[in-house]
Image 1 (cartoon, rainbow, N blue to C red):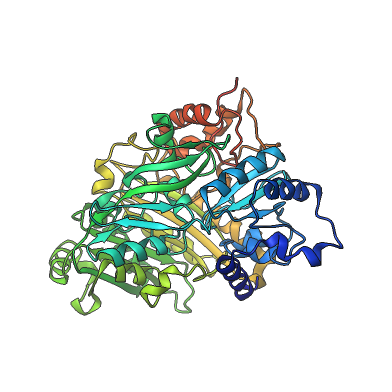
Image 2 (tube, rainbow, N blue to C red):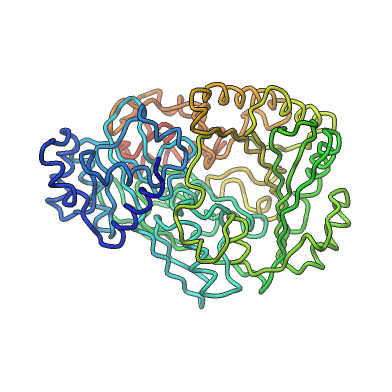
Length: 539
């Protein structure tokens, strides 16, 4: 993918508000769009929506590719949408939804393009579809006086952080570290981040929302069913409608906080010892502390392993040193490895960026070929088993495999498991995210790399949660099962709910049943569906 071309095309459309259809009319006059594209084009134009692109347009591929973060789903073999629509107003969004329905197209809504399985811009079973891209709906309205903000779903986390941090140095928003993740999908799935041990998930801090339903109606917290407002805050994206905007609670942070990223290298026994000890320390630290660790597969010729630790402390360096030198002396943390910065500057650091202004760029990191899976741990893994895990990662593994361990505890343990659909609360020590990635030159080896990841996941079964083995819905994993809908509006059948429970209960546990009831209330026709959406009850 030519990312510079994609970025330039997207920037021009945003800047000038150019209709992609009109811009391409001269070139596309000699080739008629396919029937599905022609149908939605006619509907959109008749309702006053002009900012969209069809497959015959030169802007189509750059627009479609502009926020595909997993390049597995940018390959020519992957089905492409009949149109990419970029609504600029709530009205445009409502009419895009209605036009998709009127032309029998499945709806895929994309905010940041980070869906791990590409569910915001692909369909299964060759079902014709349209992508409604929310990148133009990215306004962030901060009210420092009430410590709240209204955020349109197309805003990236970087854009949110930029607006919040510039409005008040001591206000923040609890969400993830990747600046290009879209607010819509992130919050819909829960939204874990560096502040979650202190303030909970993004979804835990949602106060209100504006939801566009399958019939084009606008619902707010006061007018939607309580089950629906509950469901949209962590029940996954793509099931309920389109959240146009979220009202969120902002949280207080000190004027300066402490951050660090440190690496440690050594033989398997040394690194296993740090991993083993981390399990007892990180989930038990004071709420103000976040300490995660990342372990890649072995790539060094001497067989040494490496691991890195990411830390954020809502306090000064002296507090960080006092607590960590006592609770985790094995880390050998030195004060010189710590920095005191504003929360906004910490967001820049953990996003891997250089300046505060970079937070508003949608291109950093672009995309990669990758596959991920997730797990949860409730009992510490023994030192002996930690060594086994590292040795597995050192044998026959690809050079770009890894595990990321994120600590829970704190506020995560005090919020009830049914307060939102996200159930992984008290009793969970940490989450594991497994990943493998590869370069374009290794596309022919993708099955080999994904196979390695699946074998690693199978190897980890004795050490993680069971009955069911848990997973995080924001780390979507189609290996767990799919709905396999055959129609644009998936409908439902007598067995749909039971089938979906096989993976839905792994994401949501006992909350899955309430999610099905919420789906039945807000979208009984299953207009909003994807490979792992919540099905309605059969009627």
